[in-house]
Length: 112
Image (cartoon, rainbow, N blue to C red; front, side):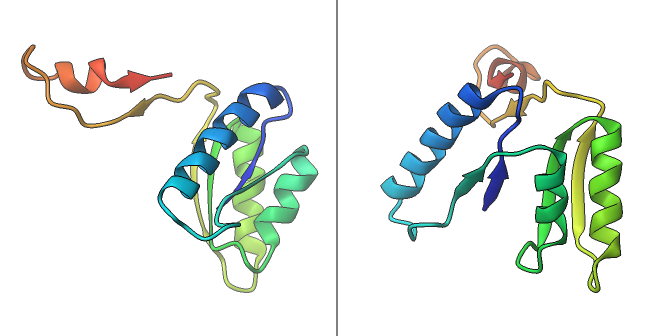
C-alpha cells in the first residue's frame, strides 16, 4: 500500500503513517508492505498511472478525484478508483456493540 500524504497536513500524515507502520510490524507483515510518499497533484498522477498500482482510494476535491479517474482510465488496463470527492473530513466507522440501542454503535464508534 502506498499512501500519498496530504501536502497541507504533513504532521497528521506522519502520525497516521507511524500508527500503520507499527500495526504492520506488530502483525508480522513484510517490510515495505506500507509506504508513504510526499508530494502534490503531480505525485498523485504519477502514482495513478504506475503499472504496479492496482486500485486507488481518494478523499479530496472533485477536481482531484476526476483527474485521478481520468488517469486511471487512460491506462492500458484501467483500474478502479474509489473516491470521496468534495470532502476533506471523512469519517471512519468501526462496528462495535452498544448497549444504548439501535443505531448508536456506529455513531459512537466514528472518528473524524
